[in-house]
Structure formats: C-alpha cells, structure tokens
Amino acid sequence: MSSQNQKNKPYSKSAGTDRLQMLHRAREVIRCEAEALQAVAARLDEQICNVAEHILLTSGLVVVSGVGKSGLVGEKISATLAATGTRSISLDPLDALHGSLGRISAGDVFLALSNSGETEELRQVVSALKAQPVFIALITGRANSSLAQVAHSVLGIGPVQEVCRLGLTPTTSTTAMMALGDALALIIQERRGFTERDFARSHPGGSLGRKLVRVRDLMWPVVTVPVVRLGTQLAEVLLTICGAARCTEMAIVLDADEKIVGVVNSRTIAGHLMRAQKLDLEASVDPYIQRPPDAIQDKASVSDALQVFLRDGGDVLIVQDTAGRFIGVLSRRDAETNGGLRRESRVVDV
Image 1 (cartoon, rainbow, N blue to C red):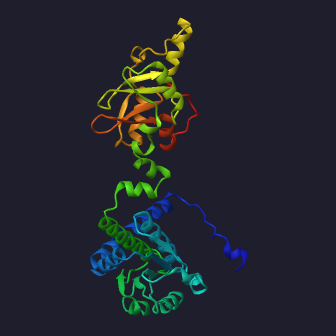
Image 2 (image 1 turned 180 degrees about the vertical axis):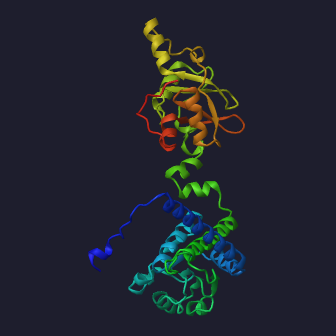
Image 3 (image 1 turned 120 degrees about the vertical axis):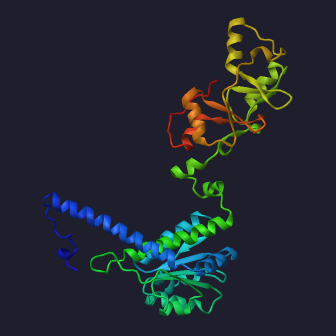
C-alpha cells in the first residue's frame, strides 16, 4: 500500500449545516445499534444458559478467540470474565495454529467469535480441538454456518445490518457480540455470588479498587500497635511504645471491655520530664491520658475515612468493630495513598 493511500482523506470544513448533518448521523448510528441490541435480546434463547452453566461447572479456563474486530471484542469479553470471577484468556487463532493451542487443556471452554461463522483460522482451531474434551461455544450472526454446525452451543446475534453506509465496517455486529459477552459474564458473576470484596481483590488499583477498599483492609491491627491498660506504670508504657511494630509515638489505653479510654503520647511524657526535671517511672499512666482520636468502624470505606480526616484533621483514626471494641489504627497517609491522594510523609501526631 502506498503512503498516499495510508493518509486520511482530506476534509474541507464547511458551514454549520454540515455539522448538523454529522450530529444527526451520529445520533442515528447510536439509535440503530440500540435497536439492533433490542432485537438480539429478543432473539436470545436458553443456549446462553447452557454456556453459562458449563462455565460454572468447570474448573478450566474460558479461552476467547476471534479474528480482526471480533478478536478485539473477544479480548474485552475475556477481560470482563476475568474481572468478574471467571478465569479467562484471549487467544489469537493464528497463534493457536502455530503452537499456542497448547494453552488449551481438557475441561476448558473455547468461546469463538465469528459474525460469518466461516472464519478459516477459527475453523482450523475448532477442528483441532474436536479431538479434546473441550466445550466449544460460538457467538455468530449465522446459526447455520460451518462453525455453528460443530459448536456445542451457539449464541446467535442474528443477521444484523451493519450501520456503516457501505454495509462493510464491523459496527452493529461487534456491538451485539460485546453486549452478548457482557450478558454471559454477568449472569455467571451473579450465579457465583461474586461480591464487592471479590471485585476489590481483582481491582486493587484505580478508582474502582479504591472505591471498594475498606478500613479493615488498611488498618494496623491491634497486635501491631502499643496497647496498655488503665493503671499501667509509665516505665511499661514507654517500653511498649518503643517495642511496637508500628511506631506511632503513642499508646492506646483500653478498659476491661477492650474499649478505648484514651491515648498516651510519648512526647507529652517527655515534655513533663523537661519541665519537672524528673519522672517517676513507677507512677500510673492515668494522669497522662488524653482524649483519643476520632473513631471509625472497620466496615467503613476508605473514602469515608478520608472525609473524616478532611473534616476533623489528625493523622490517625481509631478503628472499632460493630460492638465498639478497639481493633486497630488507620493511618492518614495509608488512607490517602490508597484513596488516590498523595501527600508528603508526616510525623504521626495526636
């Protein structure tokens, strides 16, 4: 292909009438594709239930494959399956024919995408797979095609008309395939009982992951922070603070019911020593107890915690269970890092 042919065809900007025509056409395209999806939904039968049940019952992979635009749609379907609790990979048919077929094992599901149902590369892959105990499903526009004849289940989108004026560019057909893939992934997700916490485990990054992270996922558990009881001697308090896995410069003071009474800040003790020039290390910690930081429940989202930090200030939050018992500490820096905000390192103060 010459470099001239590879360039975009020149466009001459004209009056506002041309823009109105473009806007009208853009809306027409979306309406046509929406109507096509309504037809696909009406045409859908229990074949999709067969495919979903087979995927739910197998411990194997769902291998999604297609050529060209169908291959790109297949990559998206595979990614959606993986993100919603179903192990899946996408596989280029040409790669499969030159060694990558070894990625498919007994018990796997092979989901092929071909609008015509006659894609030669897919036909060769499916022919090779027929010798293995692999379940073959097909998304296609032609239920009587060669691939449909050998597939165990066929998900038909019907003879959709491409919205392209030439009737050639894969548009409506690929939209229908993607919607059908979404439908399959979501009915499987719902039957698996896939929860928000499951979703968070597979989406640790980005705004989606941050939205689902809970305080309990980021808090410093009680075993890592300094904890003392009412009446504890100052010497033991200071040793507890110095020996804790998490250096917060403070100790949490709990009562007999594991509920927080307050906190003791090592700098408060140091200030008293500087003023009095002496410190009775055998004295009780009780006179040094200060009001504790704000508290939050472990089930709260990190977004909720950030709102508390922004509203009330401070560098840590006390984390409690539903019974009000102390179970850990949430650092503002950890909340901001995982909540999408970035701050300089700060010394924890209360």
